[in-house]
Length: 370
Image (cartoon, rainbow, N blue to C red; front, top):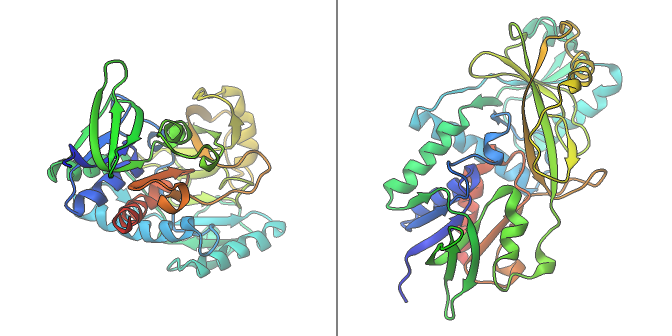
């Protein structure tokens, strides 16, 4: 039978758009559905815009593989599309002797992951790079950086549309049903929505991943992993940015911890922390500034009193709850759920933005194998 599109992708964040681009590159017509009025308004719009080197993730995991591959591809993509970025480098800092062993373990993990250019620094070397930094020792990751993530997503959208595809906003996914003989009938758009057919279906809706999977006819309920909302808030510094490089303390359980960045506009931003919540609440409690000040002064003792102002909050689609081990990305294909022509993504949190191009290529390869 003939289809309206070769592939439908649910979600127009960085990962959904990267999946759409990868499929478009293979000559397919792609429709990307987005429930919000604009692309990239979910998880992709509420993060640090950091290009991660690939330091922290277990060797052999999808996070390690996709972060390193995605980061390399991302810099090339940004160059070719003339998108603003700054490869400023990252310092992972041991602020006291007790943290040295943890930081060294990160160095060994990063080396095993194939991260380029890593270097050990003494405290004096780190302070020479970043005066005012409290560092007993540090790791330098020169491949880490920052980029204009929304411009990146616009470029992905442009490639999809240049290839004859469409990115449709304000069009929520409603349900999908398998077509006898192969393919999918997808209903989208809310009340009175449209029905389209496609040979392939990809779901990459971030925080809605579990709900979307549940609305796919025949998707096994016991194959949908439990989802959790990991909220993180950010505070902005009033005054001059103190450091040029990204500054990261050792990770906290379940996340990388509250870090520093000088954004592309030249302002200093700190965050995110991690609190598990039940709803999509994006408020920032100004009273948390006291907690942030205490944490930040571990690596920047010179933080002035009262210099932090509430900025924004993000929510990460986590597959673990408080106190539970942090799992890998999940890309679930036919061998997992038994449905032809479907890849469902779950738990695409950090480093999902850095990994997006690699994730897109992996999804396209999975569907080609299907």
